[in-house]
Image (cartoon, rainbow over all chains, first blue to last red; front, side):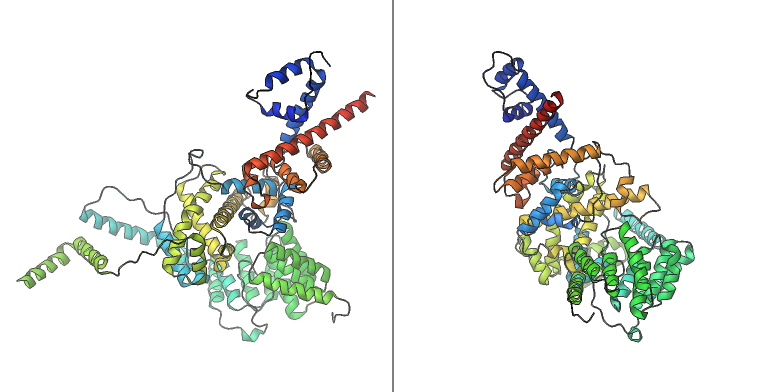
Length: 382
Length: 252
């Protein structure tokens, strides 16, 4: 140690020195004088600087993929709003603190939710109301809340209002031209809201119209299971519409794999599982979820040997590609149940319940979980 | 006489001045239409609850009008992270977010039914931010892997040229050292909380303000700063001591 010093620097002094970038701290002169004469404190300060740099290097610059144990992203909204229980919040924070996928994601979400300061964000697009959209959505929600998604299509941004009023005759000419252009555009673009909803949605609606399967299909909302009797299938208009739409798409482009998958999904909804499986096999890489679901449905309907195993295999492939796919998780849990693999079924139902938040599907999953737990018990019939 | 004048006028209006007729009809409808009753402004939670129970069109209009600026600004801010955005893009994202909030009989909106206004607004902003980031991530993954759509964006991201700032193994060792230091030095009832605050700040880059905005933390921004400072000093002391020991060991 050099001569002339009277007090060595403590850790908090080093920290204060590092934070005092502009030299405004009143103790700065004293510390600087000491550091000039003390080897020990100089070394300590260098160590502090190095550890500070290392700590800064901890932050990850890119995006880390989520893991299977990462919570559903919707739960961060509940955490930020204080809607989770204290215990759950602690659990979520614990996870975020140690997870390179969720921690940065939480940071971005919290920053986005912070109050807007126009001075610090001059490039932010200023708000402009859209009364047309507000009125249309309000009308849809007030009349048919459940059909809101179907009929409340996004509408375009409010038209700009010209400050110069055209003359009456010009207005009529403009109106006629706009009408003609609009009609032409509608005929050319054939928007879904006028010419029909996309086939995926039609298939989902067909499923919802007459849900006779325990298995789920993509995009379908929850409806209670009605009956497993094939003969009881009522006339299913969305399915007929979907058939027509898929056929038209395949006519236009026979090699379109997406349309081929939808054709197979339609076969599934007609209970023609053999056809669905045959159509999906060559597309297995693109359609593992649909193929697994078709195998599952056939296994449950006909008790065909090996179908449930195939279902597990293809649904697992689907889950490898998208670990948080609720439909694949739900269906794989059903397949485990069918195979009487109770431990796996229980784990899968629990995973599903964690993944989904509320609604009919999760209630159904809850019932399955209770049944599974019951069947696992020694002395159970199964 | 008046009748004749009226008839002449009507003929004139219908045959020669269609725009005037249109304006006449429009004005008449406006003049003669039902009196619009202006409902007293309701607080957001009350309005939301009313709409989800039995709201009519006017209630829904009031609710959507009050939510529109919140959702628009959240969408604009989240979208701005992905580069320059146009107003029409933000408007589309806003409408898309509304539709998702109202999907399945307003399943997402029901999560904030009867919750305080502040919590509702934060919830909606974070939810919209999530939706917007998902949208852009999917769009980016789709653009770089046009044949894709088969892999989730989470799987695709490592292929998209993301890089790490430090060597992974070295980082893991350092993280473990810090974690041990924190467990050794932090004690008392606030140890767990300070432990998380330290990681959120140092590992993930959350600011003291961000951390303080999480309700379960239960600290003000200053309180969080103080916790960060305390934990950081303790960790650096431990790490410096560890370094000193290893240097001593090497020299001996």
